[in-house]
Image 1 (tube, rainbow, N blue to C red):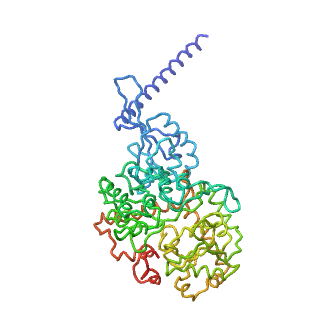
Image 2: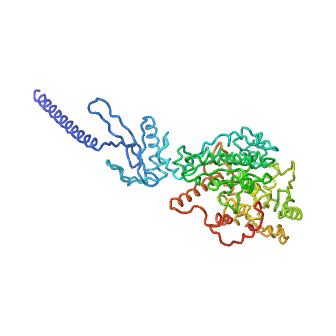
Length: 588
């Protein structure tokens, strides 16, 4: 009975020696490793059990104080790769945010792991992390804005000047003085969209329709800009600077019966304010842009006489350096660009756009062509009377909604939109000026626009409409109409049904590009007229900036009167449209 007891004691002693030795060996390894990591000043911990599954790691600076018996104060950083391939880090000091980030990463890691088997991570630093752009956004989700998200705004940042309220918000607050004939207070409601349309599902969809005034674009644009993803409070970071001056509303108060000095006062005071700002001196205003919600001719008064129309905002030296967006630009000048008139449709969701497009595809169109407008007896070269005569002669193939002074159906959107929705082609001749809001109402209704002057759309909305104008429209020369050498009915009847279907589909495809989304929301899958306008401005400012850095003359090296050619074609040589832009009144 004694031998087993001795054997048991020996075994216990042996196991104790083995365990003690293993523990000592483990402590020695740990001490060596800890000393190595401290010497490097960094400790690596993984969000998940496998770095290959996440492509994300946290870097913690080891701040252990050997004299204090406390846990190390760890500063965590997110390590990731940006769009340019550079390795970047982001501080994550809040433990709760770190926990949320870890959970998000764990949940999405499995889906993003298969294509990243070759990812390497070095204790001395990140040497190779092949992370795709979309994987960065999938993996790094937290309550703070990461550097990867910020980098998406490089070249897109916009700074908004905080101009005195007298130039914008005060005008809205005193809306009763903006027009002698129209209740602008009602029309400026809903962030500039105006009142909601009463329900009429035979003409409109259930949501997204407003009684929008065509001269409130500057208010709509300003409110849409507040939803822009890449706004910045640091003007030095901005690629473009927005001036939220409601120039159209300002001048509209004085267009009738006021002196030219009164009409110019707001513009002169504004540019003086801009000149004194440090942001102006960076590029002398060439990175500034604004929206003037009326046609260009309301801001191009060439002489200082009370009898002449408008003010001289666009003729000021400061304005010529800026990019000014208008509902109609001058083909003969280079500092303004046309963007679409506001329509009645302002979708708040992408589904509203999809549903409306599909509805216009299914719409039955029994009328070959239609015209909504009135004659222009005071304009000698106007073809309005000829258009009306040809429409009446076509009888049931053409529908006419003749507009006159005073209340009429032309000023009631339900009648205009109903007629356009039932028409294959919509005639869009010049009126008091080259363009008209009806162009965009017809596109919204899926009606193919028929133009009689290339200045009505083709040389105007170069950012929003296709350069290949035959894809979505028909051009009939105004000279041929005036000379009575062309039959509109015969031209339109000669277009095949197959070609009509292609053109109509292109028009319907353009709908999201020519409408302004509800400023209280933003579309996710579509670029609306606002988005496209901002991209156009940023590209223009970027080009001007590159020219300035290279020491090039940023003024155009061609006669400004042929700006329409350069903006549309990039060339200034002879063109078949030259007769349309020569020897005529500037207002068309």
